[in-house]
Amino acid sequence: MKLLSATFISSFADVAKCPPPEKPEFAFIGRSNVGKSSLINMLTNMRKLAKTSVTPGKTQTINHYLINDSWYLVDLPGYGFASVSKSARAGFGKMIEDYMLKRENLYCVMILLDARHEPQKNDMAFIEWAGDKEIPLSLVFTKIDKLKPNELQKNIAAYKRMLLTRWEELPPIFLTSSEKGIGRDELLDFMDSAISSNPMPLK
Ligand code: GTP
Ligand code: MG
Picture 1 (cartoon, rainbow, N blue to C red):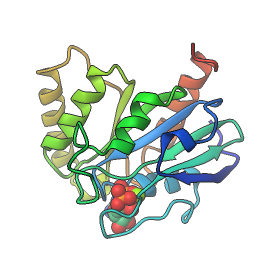
Picture 2 (cartoon, rainbow, N blue to C red):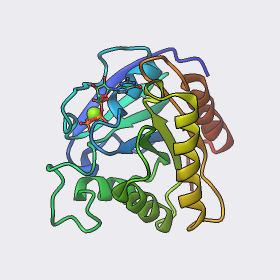
Picture 3 (cartoon, rainbow, N blue to C red):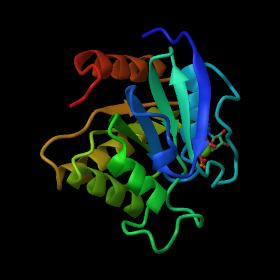
Picture 4 (cartoon, rainbow, N blue to C red):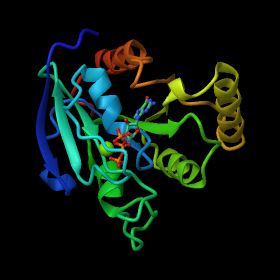
């Protein structure tokens, strides 16, 4: 897919205030600092579209970016950071949970995982929760520029092993580096084919 335009639309803390669910949508979720906002900038070729930071907890709201005037990329706050309310039912924050469960135009949740780390408890818990709720998901490994190829393969294999103890099938998996632009074409092609194979309305 050719990316022709990317425009910031809105930033809200409540799924009820998001833009009308009339266009396909892909959301980026993952622990704070995993690289969600950076990946949006990398995909759109715009260095400052989504705000990034070396300090975790930068993104605090649901941010919609309109791509090619026809579908949305969504940047979400991270889970596993102090800003996540302790009272939230699944522990990921009520905002994120509501968004995941209620957003009817959500084509796929892209779960970002730092390729440098072994499977983390809150990531596995989130994957499991989303899987149980039958939310379509993909796994996107980030920051692969920081790893040697053999370390990367080892960590991905550990994730796959862990997932296959719980699931019969693996979700789509992408390896990315926002720093180096790795994985851009693969992600955009994935979104393109998801949209073409299931045009709106979804139901
Ligand atoms: P929150 O909004 O706090 O949840 O974080 P986030 O997931 O949006 O992370 P963000 O994109 O702000 O990136 C966090 C830090 O990781 C920044 O310092 C980025 O420059 C860095 N970073 C993100 N992606 C990459 C990558 O692919 N390679 C390298 N080397 N650094 C990256
Ligand atoms: Mg962010």
